[in-house]
Length: 167
Image (cartoon, rainbow, N blue to C red; front, top):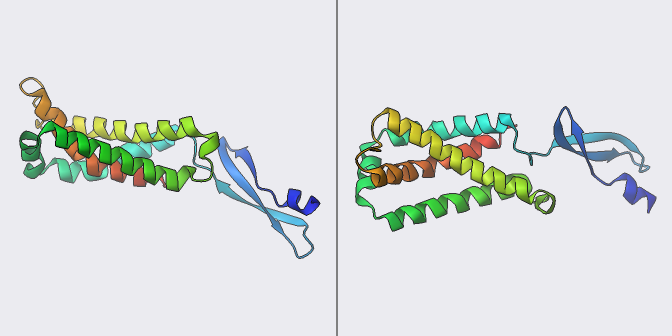
């Protein structure tokens, strides 16, 4: 019973960030050291910058292709909504399995906040990029602008989610 208490993992804040402390035991069962693993369950300003940079990684090459511009004109909005839903599902699954699989019960709000932040920041990055290169016709055809943003945000949000996993 006492050995079980010694081997239990604990969560502590070290340098402003949450870490999981796992005891390392010797052959007699005594704790000789601790292994610290960062728990990346809180959305910090550093994470937001990583998301923005990660969203830019694929927003730039995909946003500069004429194929995505014409898809935004041709595809019906129902297909675009399905693409947005698929993006959110992929992000939610990726974030769950990489950050919250064993901690979701205690950090549900942080999980939802991270998934939404990744998608919304990706939409903003893509929207800014397409507006700068004048491929978002806000004044003449807002629907085409929104459809183009959602199309390019699909790969952009995936790269944002991946870059968010960097420690």
